[in-house]
Amino acid sequence: MAFAYDVAVDANSGNNAHAFMLGMVGFNKSVLEVGCAAGHVTKVLAQRGCTVVGLERDPAAARSAATWARRVVVGDVEDVGTWAELGEERYGAVMLGDVLEHLRDPLAALRRAVGHVAPGGMVVISLPNIAHGDVRMALLRGAFPYRETGLLDRTHLRFFTRETMRELCAEAGLVIVDTKRVVMPLFQTELGVIRDDFDQTLIDGILEDPEAETYQFVVQAVVDNGDHAVVALADRLAELSDHVHHEGVRRALLLRDLRERAEMEEEIRWLRRSLEEAEGRYAAILGTKTFRLVAPLRRLYGMMTRPEQPGSRPAPKRP
Image (cartoon, rainbow, N blue to C red; front, side):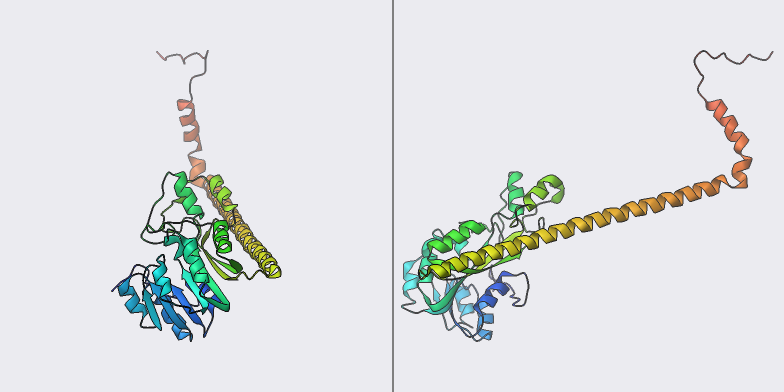
C-alpha cells in the first residue's frame, strides 16, 4: 500500500531533512517519533540501534511502521488521550518531522512532546519555510497554489518562517542548539513558478534575504532548564549559525554573478571572433578577380538606381 508521506530515506544526503534529523538523533537512543507515518524513518533509526516508539493517526500506516518500532500508538497527536497512552515514558530524542504545520495547535502538541524528553535528551523538528522565494513570487502573481506535498501541502494548517519557528520552540520551553537548512533554488520547487514571469530586479531583491531559498528548517533543541548561560550560549550559536548560512548564500550569489559575467565575456569573445571571420571573408571577396571585373557593372547599376537630386535636369532625349 502506498502512503502519502512514505518516501525513500537517504541518510547520507547533504541536503535532506531526513538526513539532517537522523544525524542529530545519532545512534543507540530511545526515540519517540511523532507522526511516524509508514515507518520510512523508523526503519533507519532501528538500523542505527535506536528503540523507537511511534505516534501515528493512520492505522494502516501505523501497522507498517510497527515492523521496525517497539510499538506504535495509534491516535491524533492533538488528542490528550493519545499522549496519555505513553504514560510516564521519557526518551533520549523526540522527533517531529514535518508534523507541526499540520496541527491546529502546534504549540500544545510540542509542549506535550517536551514533557516526554528524558534528562539530557533532545527534540528534533523539521518545518517548511513559508517565506521561500517561490511562495513570495506566487503571491505576487495572486496565487497560493496548494499541492499534495511540499511547501503548500493542502493539509498544512500553520505556516512558519525562521523567526516564528524559533518563537514556537521558545514558547514550548526549548532552547535551539543547532539549525540546518534544506536549500531549494528559486524556480525549482513544486510550485511551478516560472522565471520569465518576473523581472530580474525583483528576483535579485528577493535573493537579498538569505532565507529566500531555504525550503525547510531542521532544528535540534534541548529543554530550557533556566540556566541563563546555556540560553545565552544557544543564542550566540544561533547567531553564528545564521551568519555562516548568510555568508554561504552571499558566496553562492557572488559565484553566480561571476559565472554570468564569465558567460557574457565568453559570448562577447565569440561575437568578436565571428565578426573578425566575417570581415576576413568580406576582404577575401573584395580581393577576388571576379569582384574586380564586375566593378564597372556595379558602378553603372549604382548610377541607374541613384535617386534624382532636387533641381537636377533630366538627360536630353536623343532624336
